[in-house]
Every structure is written in structure tokens, then in C-alpha cells.
Image (cartoon, rainbow, N blue to C red; front, top):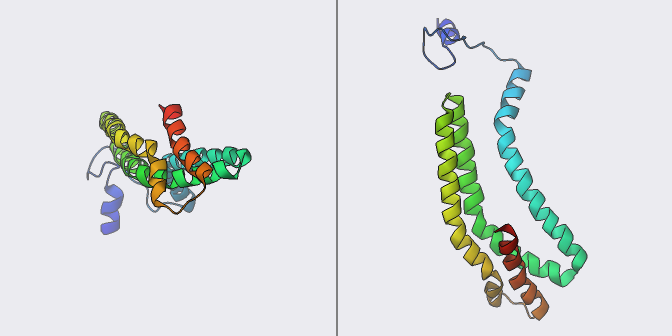
Length: 164
């Protein structure tokens, strides 16, 4: 009885609808395909973010150890301050947009995208200010090398100007 009612449910969850009924049980390959199709946007976001950070480290590593150390100090401040934007708004956008598209409402997904872009833009202003003064935060750390402090001040400023 329960199995029959589950199979009679349509894809939109209404019983007795004329939509295509769900095919139960799913095979392993169908489950894999559904998981991959649902998770590839999030995986792409994380991969792009990590590739950007890795590129900075690779380039600065070739320029010298002082520049790399300054970048590492500034990177700590940048990562801590920006995690709210990319982790909070990015993951929320992916979740809410996926639900909207899955429910057959792409207009709602568009609204979530616009809201997320607006929130990220407004949220980026204080983060950019924190990045601009990231080198000054190094004054609280026990670092006596003036070159490292100089590069820790310079790295987020250049990043702000390039990304603007």
C-alpha cells in the first residue's frame, strides 16, 4: 500500500497528478548522476576560489621569501574577513537557487541571484577596508622584518586595486 502510494506520487509531490511518476527504486548510477548534477556548482565555486589563491602563492613564491611571507600574513586577514561573503552568500545562493530551479521557478532563482549580488557588493565594502589596512594589523604580530611588514601592507592593497 505504501509502496503503491509512493510510486503514484508525481515529481512535484502531488498525488494523482498527470506528471510522470517517480521511478523507484533508483539505481546506483542514477543516484550518482543526481548527486553530481546537484553538487557541481558548489564544487566549481570552491575550485575557482582555491585556484586563485594557489596562483597568488605560486607567483609570490617565485618573487622571494619576504614577499611570500608578507602575502601569507595578509592572506590570513583576507581569508578570515572574506569567509563570510564566499561561504555565507555563495552557499546560500547555491542552495536557494537549486531549490527554486528544482521547483520549476527560475524567476525566483533570478531574484535570489540579484539579492546575493547586492548583499555581496554591500558586504565587500567593509571587507575591502579591512584588506586595505591588513598590513597595519601586522603591528600586533611579533614580526621584526620591515620588508615582510611592507609586503603585508602592499599585497592586499594591490589585490583590492586589481579586483576592483
